[in-house]
Image (cartoon, rainbow, N blue to C red):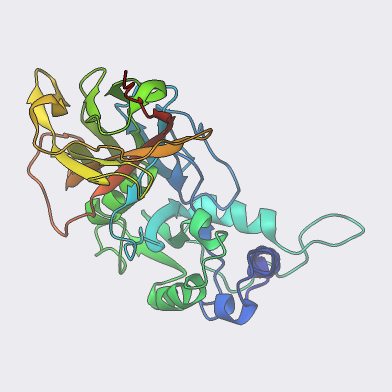
Length: 347
C-alpha cells in the first residue's frame, strides 16, 4: 500500500466509526481514500472538510461543484422533501481533482512523517509516477459526505456498490472519462438535494383563531408562488458540465389535523397567476369543515405544496426537460386553528 494513503485510511476509519459504518465496508472501496463532497449548498471533491455558505445563494468548494439558486427568501424555506421516499441522491461519482504537480504536493503533505524531524519518511514517493510533466488530471472517487455521515442503515451497502469506481486514476488529456464521471445527470441529483422550497402560509377564512363549527374553511395564498430552481456546475480540468433542477408548484393539500372534520382534507390544483402560481378555494367544491369544537386546545392544520421537479442539462432553467425523471418535491406549512361552536339561543 502506498504510504501516502495510510493517513487517509486512518482518517476514514475514524469517520466511519463515528458514522456507525463498518470499517470493512469502507475498506472494500479500494486503497484510495474517498474525496468528500461539501455540506449545505456546496458539493465537491475536496478531501478536507471545507464548506461554503449554507444560506440561500451561491456556494463553492475548491475543485468542486458550484451550486446556486434563484430563491431569495431568507426564511420560510426548508430542504425539499422527496415525494418518493425511496429516491436517494447520488452517493458517489468520479471527478478530476489534481494535476500531476498538485497530486505530488498533496501526497507529500499527507505522507507519514518522521516524529522527530516532521519530514516525510524516505520512500514516500518511491515507484510513484505523478505525471508531473504530462497533460491530464488525477480523477478521484468522490462521495457525498452528508449521506455517509447520516447514519442511514442503507449507506454501507450503497458504499459497497461504489467500489467498482476507480479510487484514484490518472486520465491523460483527450482520453475517455472514468466510469460514472461527473455529468449533468449526477449534477441534477446534487442540485435536487441542495434545493430549498418555501412552505408558503395560506390565508384562512374564517381566520385561524376564529374557525367555526360547520362553516367551510376557505384558503388562498397571500401572494403567488414562484418557480424555484437550483443550478449545479462543474468546470475544471477541461470538464464543463451543468444541470438545473426546476420546481414548479402544482397542487396544494389542506389537512384539517383532526378526524372531527368533513372532509378531513382537500386538494387543489394551482393556477398560473401572472408570474406565479396561486389558489383560491372560495369557488371550489371541496373545503375543510370542522364538525367539533377544539375546546380549550387547537387543531394542527397542515398546508402541503406539491412541486413538479424537472431538470435540464445546462444552466438554463427553461431548457428541455431531461430523463431520468426526478421525484416531486414537498413543502409543508402548519398552523394551529381554534374552532368554536356557536350556540343557538331559544327564547
